[in-house]
Length: 150
Image 1 (cartoon, rainbow, N blue to C red):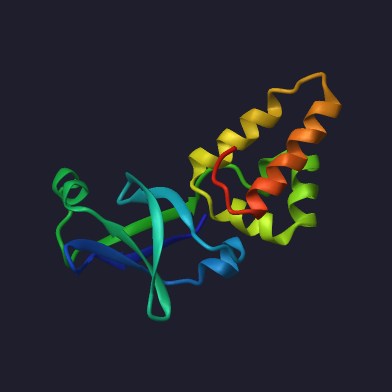
Image 2 (image 1 turned 120 degrees about the vertical axis):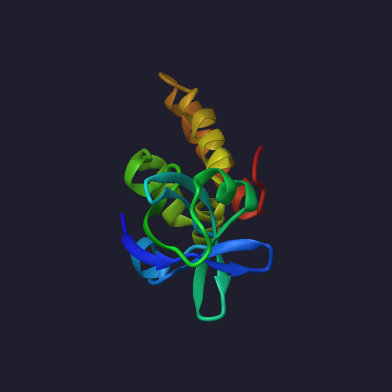
């Protein structure tokens, strides 16, 4: 879980924090980085936005208003990927995703809600390994086709 200090700057109508590291090196290559963490111990979540040669975390006006942090302030930021990832997903699902790089890349880029929804659907097959295998195969087919949900 990376922790760093950054200056809160303005970008358009949002305040942003420029990410001082390459997310692909820390978390692996993926189409989107949905994160959770803290800014000066205040909870934050969202998606990192690509910007020139780096990424940034956008913070909306309501977040700024409610947290009491001003533009130009130095902040301590701790970030981590949000939601289920390979290290906390069942081995059979991980193996199926690794066998289909297109499905894996799409799954990795999904918001947490959709990843959890697929995993709950598969986990609903307790005691029925044949049904579980069918659902995993169907999930891979749907993900490879770019479907967020079944």
